[in-house]
Length: 367
Image 1 (cartoon, rainbow, N blue to C red):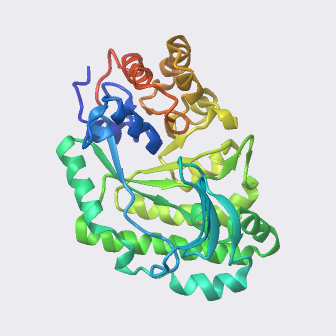
Image 2: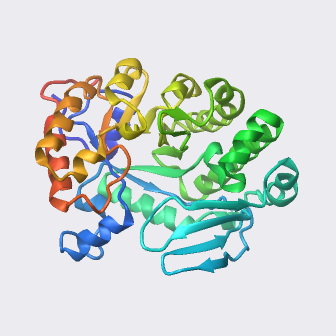
């Protein structure tokens, strides 16, 4: 019987698929959700959701990867609902004011290798101004005090390319000018590592690394496995291997359907896949059957069951999945995306309580 573990101990073991007392717990929320629950009196004004729900993990996103650090966002157009801005990557994006949503990609200054080489690449240096040392220091200390597993969070190469040139030009470049994409991948991979080197030398290392890489949409990844292996995987291998050299496990997030890429992502060395988006076509149980011995999993709980606010649907989702994915000690409870404000506080609290009840191990022994 494994005695009660701290969150830090629990996640460290889960990422190595070692015996634990229960499955892990973490979550992402829309900003609107927290504001609503606070207004309703469920969450204190200064209370962190990680403390409120006793999450096992805490992250910090301390690095800015925008090309021009000195650029002041330029408002091109503003309405009651949206704002159209040009940012320091030369990208023109329309954002909603009232709610958190993916911005509309309107235009990009970078559409080919020439603009990349003149407008962006020379600016991508490991300037310490890119790093919020204070935020990292505070989050690391808070996680230590609470006994949570602390991760450095940030985007990896795929999620750093498309904010500069957009998905369309990036994907066209993969076919028409693959050397341009290779250059972007290598440039961003080196920048990630250089910034981590500066930050960790000054403030100390985290417990792990969390990379965000949204490489799929509904039923399809953005690229074939062959293109992933040729162009993107080298950046993943470089950044994941450096984390492993430091003794740090790697969690990789990807929205969308990315199952065809998973064998090569595992080969690149990732330790955990998050978020396993059901509505995009991902199947938590299938992935667990195929990769559970080599890969820990976080997510895959259909958030649509939660925003139905029907406890019978929540029970059905949890009961169909947790008894299976807890096998092998490599699972962290999380929705398949994030929690919108249509999910009531009581529903989410029930989801956590019931999920952890199902996810407790009755008999196990530490390795």
